[in-house]
Image (tube, rainbow, N blue to C red; front, side, top):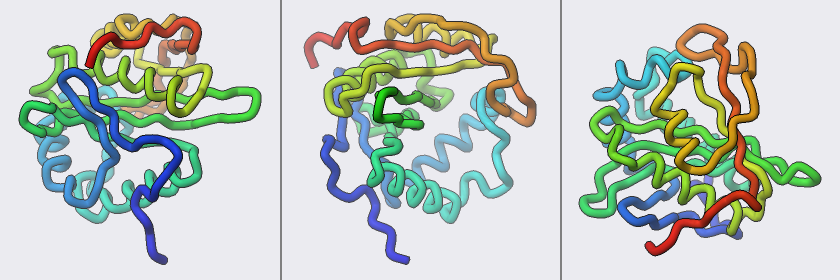
Length: 198
């Protein structure tokens, strides 16, 4: 089977923000991605599903690319890596997943950031930019995001981006080997304040 990585779509595959830009991952990103994830392993493990033994291998990365490419081509989801504009350094990733059309017109956000780039406002900038992308290019109406109840950094990001707390979801996701409660947040198109400038 021949896999086409991120074929032409109806939406722009690149987002340019004030300090960052987002684009779909490609095969050439593997080494930098694996290095950042490896350096940030202990920082990320408490907030993510259990990593398989080959989580950082080139084979696993290519499987993820194929999965993301299929989702992109079918309009089910959009995966991005996040880079710093000043030096093209990879700082993290964001995925727009569970895209639902019809009467729902909604999606979910998931994101991660490298340890050395945390608490510099990069993820807040990314989430706000991705919200603009979802509402203006994907023409969706609702974005959901969930985070662990003790993930104060992620809670801060969502609040700064304008998300509203909707409630506690028990045993929502299996994180680091355990089913964990999450706080569910959402943002509606009519509540979003687009970023100013560029």
